[in-house]
Amino acid sequence: MELYIMRHAIAALRENWEGPDQDRPLTGQGRSRMRRAARGLKRLGVRFDVIASSPLVRALQTAEVVAAQLGYRSPVEICPALAPGLRPEAVFQFLASYPDAERLLLVGHEPDLGNLALTLIGGGHADRFPMRKGGVCRIDLEGMPPNGPGFLVWSVTPQILRALAAR
Image 1 (cartoon, rainbow, N blue to C red):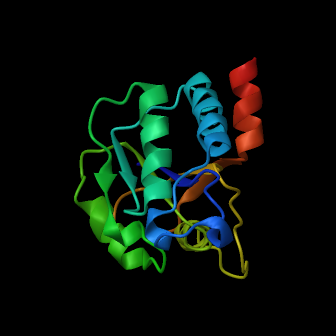
Image 2 (cartoon, rainbow, N blue to C red):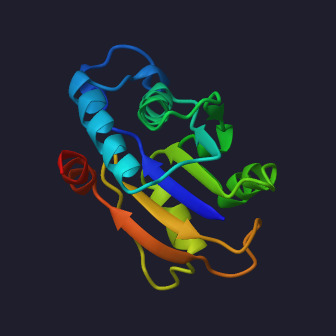
Image 3 (tube, helix red, strand yellow):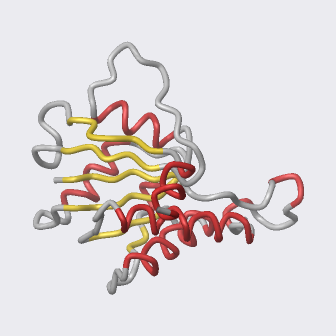
């Protein structure tokens, strides 16, 4: 299984947002940069069998931008386990519900996604796996739940993805 983990794109600042945090949307710049970054994923030949997102607006909007740019035709799955405060076991249970999927994208929040990535690759002594807004990593796993550490194939910043899109 190829598991792709992506942090949501640039969202409205908390201090400028008057509504509930869960409703905080992407900014125009966040959407624009994410469209270009998704084109970088497309240039890499990345495609997904399943795209799942945290239920928070900024993550769902990020997932929808990626889905549109890659021509993904199914609806984005809402995965409550990807909300802030995520527990890896709940994510594993969600992933196990897609036994035939070979390429999955999870979109969510930091620091939870970095911690999930560390858990999946057997991070051991590392204390952090930082992910920039709009950044993505690919971890290959033998199955779900993982019965051993996965293999980190790559981790790229949104700047690298946008540069790939511009080539």
